[in-house]
Image (cartoon, rainbow, N blue to C red; front, side):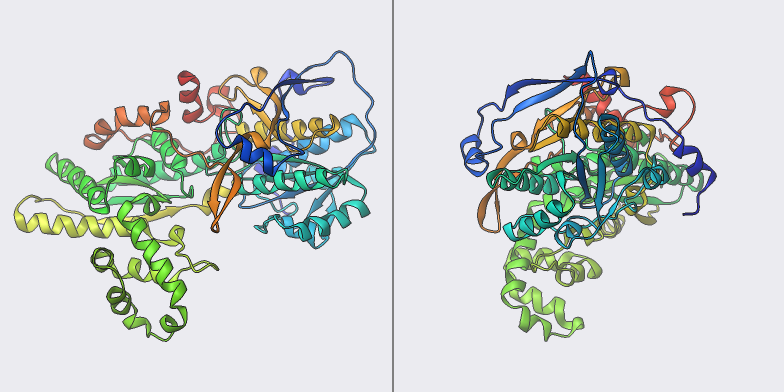
Length: 549
C-alpha cells in the first residue's frame, strides 16, 4: 500500500506497556462472579462458562514454555481506531510465548469464519498495519454468530487449520455472540477457546471491569478537532448557528466527551432528555431560549452538539416510531402502492390523534425519512434521521413565531453537520495505540493460560501506563437479560451516560456559562509526538471518572 510520511513514522512507533505485560507473566485468579439480579437466568444459559473467576496479570519470575498454538482472529462490527494494534499485540505475544505459533485472520468479519475465508497473518503482513487506523488488514462485517449451524461451519475450518483459540474483536453485540460461541464449544468439548476484546467508538461497552472500549479516545478527539474548527469559524464569521450531530448510537458518551473538550454553547444529552421526560418541543424551546439570550448580548451565532440517538429518547417520538413500525410492518404491501407525494397524508390519516399531530408537525424530509428508511425487520432506522436538521428547522420555526410576538429581534441562520465516519478509521491516538496493543497481548496470555469465555481487559486507564493493570473478565459477568424479538435473552448491557457520573456533573455545572459566553476550545489535530500531557492524555471522561471512584 502507498504510505504517507506520517504512516511510515507511525509504523515504527513502539506501544508502551505496563510491567505485567513485559516478559514473564503470572496469571492470578480472583473472585468469581458475584450473585446479583439475573444471575440464575444467566447461569442457566451458560452452564459451562458461568461463574468463572476474574483474572489479573502480575510480573512473573521466569518464562514458561508453551506449546505452539494456532489462533484465529475476527474483526466484527463497525470500525474503531486501534483494531490493527490489537492484532499486532496478539501476534507479538503469541510469538514471544512460542515462535512456532501461527495467526489466521478471518476475512470480512464473522462471515469469513462461516464461509472459510481467511489469510495467514505473518510478520510481514502485521508490520504493514502497526499503529494504523481502519480494519482493512482483514476487513470487518456485521454477520451475527448466534446459530448452531454457524458454530459448526466455523468449527470445520478451525479444525482444518488446527486452530485452538478464536479472538473476536467487537462491541457489546459481537462479544455477546462470542460468549455464546464460547459456551457452545465448551458444551460439545470442541477444545476451542474464545476470547473477546472491547471495541466501539460509541463508548457504550464499559462497566466496573471494562473502563473504556477502544477507539472512543481517537474518535472523540477527531470529532473534537472538527468541532473546534467549526467553532473557530463560527466565532470568526459570527453569523451562523451550527447544529452538529455526532455518531454514538443510542448512548451520548461521544457527545458528552466532545462537549467537555470543546465547550459548545449547547449540548443535548439523550439520557438527560429521557430522565426528565422532555418532549421534542421542550428541546427546541431550550435551544431557542439560548439563541434569544445570546442574541440579546449581540451574539447571533453558536454551536449545538446533538447525539445520534436523541430521537429514541424522546417519549413522544418513541411512541410515534413504535406506531409507525407496527403499522408499516402490517400494511407494507398497501403502503408500497401509495405514491411518494401522497405518503405523508396517507400515514397521517392512519395514526392515532396524538401521533398524527406530532407527525404533521415534522419537517417534510424528516417525516419522509421516518416512513422510507426502514431496516430489514421493517423498523425505522433512527440513526438515518437528520436530527440536526430537524432541530435546526424547528428552532427556526419557533423563533419566527417569537419574532411575530416581539420576543425575538435577532438573526438566526443555520448550518448542519453530521460527524460519524470521519472518526471510525482515523489513525489511532497514542492512547488507543497503546491500549489496543495491551489488549492484544492480554488476549494471547489468556489463551496461553487455557481460558475461554473471557474478555481481555486493561484497567487504571486514567493513570500512567506503568500503572495499568491487565487481565481478563468473564463475559457472563457483564450479561443481563433483555427482551429481544419477543424473547428474554442474555446480552451484554449497553452502558448509557450516568446522570450521577462525574462527566455529566461536570457538563451540568459548566453548560450555563458556555451558553451565554463564547469560551470555545480548539483542540486541534491529534498529537503523536511531544510532551506526554499532549500526546498521551486519556479522555476527559476517564479522568473525571477516576476522581469519582
